[in-house]
Image (cartoon, rainbow, N blue to C red; front, side):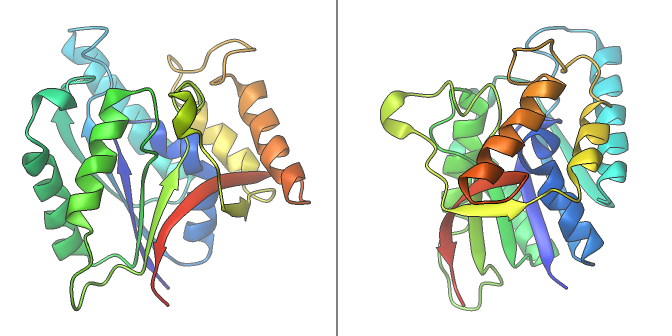
Length: 220
């Protein structure tokens, strides 16, 4: 059994990026903690009802994926760049001290979304190698409609693939909780595109469905 920490700029990143993998972690008896930094709504709407709804959707999605532990920091959406990097990294450090995870999942550094980039930079600080650190793996995940829209030199070039054939339906069921985030095809966050993406990454390594990652550091 492992303890897993998932760092998400927004509620829905956990499902879009690695929902199938997190479902597998849960099935295998691993304990998963998802830390959400922003409310995911205030950049578009100022109504507190939307923020509350998004939180409820996240909790419902996580329940489908077997995730029992979540925390919401409620930073304003698309505004993490206005907060000190040290402040953001200290939140991560605090959770690492509390949770003692062996695996940390974080955003890809080349994403077009500025909140994602901020979380990655904060992760680098919070997970810097220290004696007696519990962290054995640091892994970047992709986020459809952000990772592939990033700058060309910083393309997502995965070196880790997880077979999610058995948990793809769980991922799609969890994604459907975010009703306002699902878009019509051919948008990257459409149901069809999510399935096609899993098939693309799967076929690239000889399996039916996969989620892809960049393994930043591993200590064995």
